[in-house]
Amino acid sequence: QVQLVESGGGLVQPGESLRLSCAASVSISSIYAMSWYRQPPGKQRELVALITNGGSTNYANSVKGRFTISRDNAKNTVYLQMNRLKPEDTAVYYCKADRERFVVGPGYQYWGQGTQVTVSS
Image (cartoon, rainbow, N blue to C red; front, side):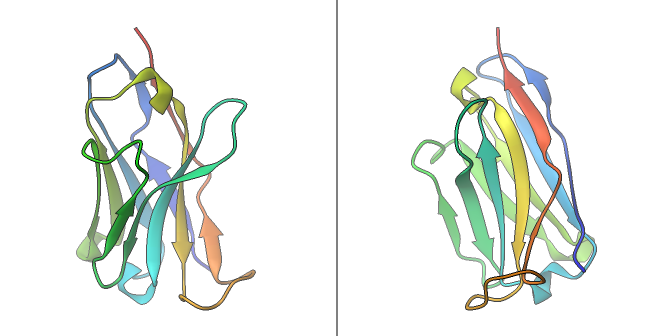
């Protein structure tokens, strides 16, 4: 019911920047929260950043001060600006939509297919 398409990943050197985009097939104003997760090779998937439809944000400690999540409601798109990238930021980055705050299950949570970010010298 909700399609999410990530883009913007790539190969960069340490210290450089990337901006990821997540385009949704529905109005993101109707979605409770949009978030970015990442899964490094051989590691568990972890929450990176989250933004609610009220504008509240939350970040993992490892990216605070370097990453910024934002949204453009007119474009139904959520962004993740990643600055001062480190090799440990290397991962597949996934976009997630939570349609409602208090409901969990199929039809209420949606995931994109992911985009690869590689930080290497």
